[in-house]
Image 1 (spheres, helix red, strand yellow):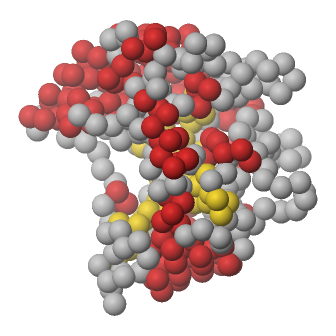
Image 2 (cartoon, rainbow, N blue to C red; image 1 turned 90 degrees about the vertical axis):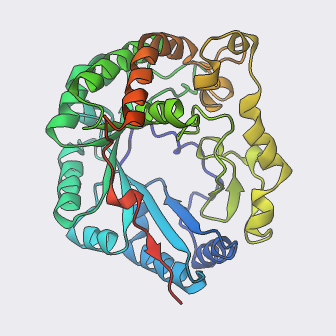
Length: 372
């Protein structure tokens, strides 16, 4: 695929022009080090580019190494973010047998999806992605859907919500697209504006609440319900600190976040430095804390405790970010929280009382257990 708004295409780590594929050496070192930290639950999230291009044998080796280096009682969680194009029956049998949870990118109905998610010949990919989704259903592979909101589909919240309902995409995340045009330094033409995002979130919330929050899980909304019930978020976008994970690239280089895979952000390489030291590196800790550095506008905002300034990338990395250090989507968040906060509080009260249940997946609970 050759998606118009792929944020990763320009973030290459070498100038050789070769294929960026993780070697067996890096794979084994990564798994050996991580399993050796003896966490009770060990989570791997496989991303690309497109991870299925590595082939099934690569992931079979990964699963084998996880079992080899795992300790008795450990649980392994494997997640994969994919465009879904290569998910044939053989792939889906493998993913089901090894309890992988997928995130599949699909941008709504065909006319929306095929506008930006094309292959290298310029052909649309909607039908191939939907075929992959059907193969997942046929073989019992658990998945979430990820819908990128671009300048076109963001104007049609009703159409997108209907698409989710009609295709039983019960676990969904809507990701706002904001990328920089390298020529102008301004947001690219497929990016959305804060006003578009705010309007979309408000309308989506109304549709979700009317339809039944117990029937569809919208990731941002789930995080907000969790906040009102338990006092913490499930998404790093709204959390007090950035996510505590590490990104390991194909060559072993380590970074703090997939949105900041840039040479100046590199904190080391697992072939030279143990994973444990990389995870506790002072630069990583500083990056996690950077989310708590707010501009004056945030400090006087009624919604600071809820949004915590949004994602760091929307404050500092993009050409469209505000000069004062606030989030590009600040006005969208204000509009949305002004509109939805009473509703979220009521939903949270119903969850706490047991009146409202939440839809769950077996993949959220069942993992591969190591027995030795």
